[in-house]
Length: 306
Ligand code: MG
Image (cartoon, protein in one colour):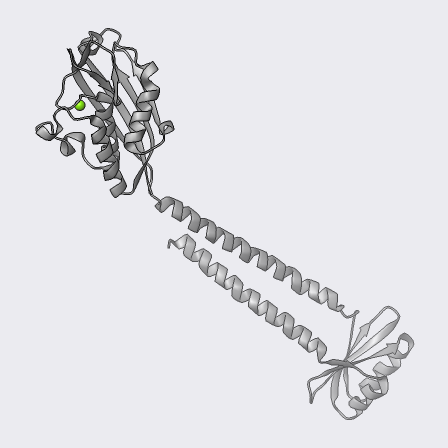
């Protein structure tokens, strides 16, 4: 937890304690109000005569006065209502009996006391909720920050083209007079795809898993490689999010065959075909690819953790 979060946590719990104290004061204030009783003027003066009330307060109302005093023995408040005209005489009478008299403006009605207590309470409760939401938001952001990021890998492959060999690209046999020379079926797109997936997962490259010195892979269908890579990714809890590939060749035209290639690659990888995107490029007649002596493929693959 960083210092900012610690400060917010301390502030939050401090606010909770403060809220509790204010609630306690409000409850005790109401409790105190309930410990006050209205009595008659005669009863009030009897308490004065008995020495139970030493101090009194005269609250000025609009058409009457409210005389209030506390019983020093029971600590209970008592009040009585006086006619306006009677107030000066009563004050004089109380003073003569040794009672200390104060005169104050009208007593705050209970609703005003509640309002004065309630508004800060509402503000404090809102502030606590605000802090709580901020803390939950920070927790959510921390979860996002610690969640694994998507992983990307790149793959490239090139094979020489030789007359009389079958042309296999993306798991599909294409009608053409030349085909790739290689230990396996020479599917450049499948091989580049394997490398992109293995690279994104940090699992090496195609040569590590399917060495071209192993006779087991001689003439192998490259879809077998992809199916094996699919299992390796599953073991590491990786899911394929997207594949973007480009095949570079002068001939033949590949675009019409892409739907079948995407289906074949998707089937081998156990994903839907819409996760695989393919493009074709020529090499503008330049270099070995441009002269029709080779074909190549580049693939970018994106993985996520499950
Ligand atoms: Mg290859």
